Length: 130
Image (tube, rainbow, N blue to C red; front, side, top):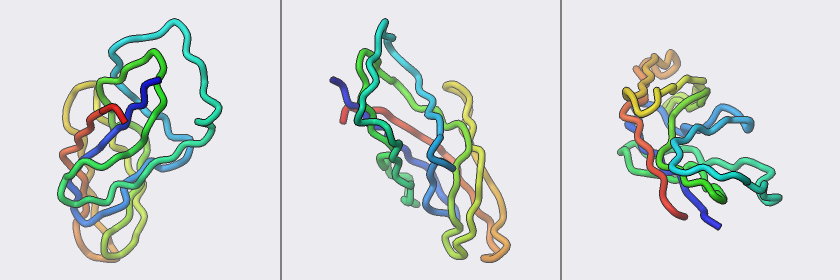
């Protein structure tokens, strides 16, 4: 049984607690090998993810997966995410779509309550054995 962990890093400006927008979030990966049969695990009925709070672009675990017969080589930032304004606590729902192996995803906005620009840039991810 192979357990893989996805670690993410990004530059944050005025925001914290980056995480998938809801519990039904779909994760997108680059894969190395495929399997002819994958058995679902009864222990993985719920999805747990940790919010990203680092402002200095250090890698932080996002999710750990039990992978049988499949090896991921990369993670793609796609779908709806949410974050909070660092000073105001304002919740933002954002789209961090990043094309397959392509350009850097980026999000910029303005926090009206805190009266300051907010943003996320330099998205990076790596997959390692847990």
